[in-house]
Image (cartoon, rainbow, N blue to C red; front, top):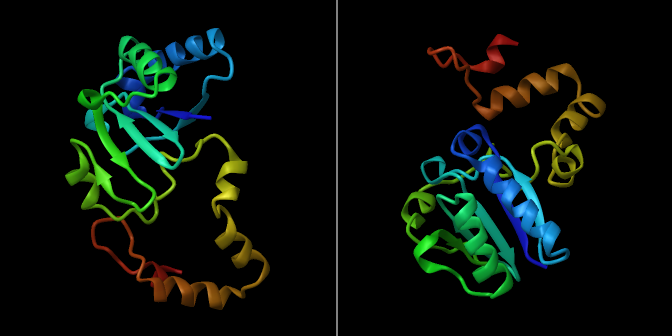
Length: 173
């Protein structure tokens, strides 16, 4: 079954993502089982919001500038009809991590580390966060490490403060 994600970060919401999500919800209610509708956080192309991602059989298609009217077209042509609407595609991503589409150059230059799950999981679901490794470090620090070991790991990480001077965080502790 196709999974349809709508970017519901502040950038998406300010561009009308709630209306797009609501329209897709109406279409799903009128056509039960045609797809699974999911909320997610920022998909990382704020300049193309509202963004809708469709995942199906390993492929990921990202549509940009999706108004409720465009959402209905995507529903009819892509979700029901299986047709990728090329002129509306912002980005594609295949199983091997290869990007395509109008915004592929923007995406290829990035290596997401801290925000790697942003845009792929529901930010309001602790279960999804934990299923993707959330709280593993906290659990390790609380149950397996001594305070000195935690400080040493912070020092080794090279983590720096955000106050402007970039002071090493491990030294602050």
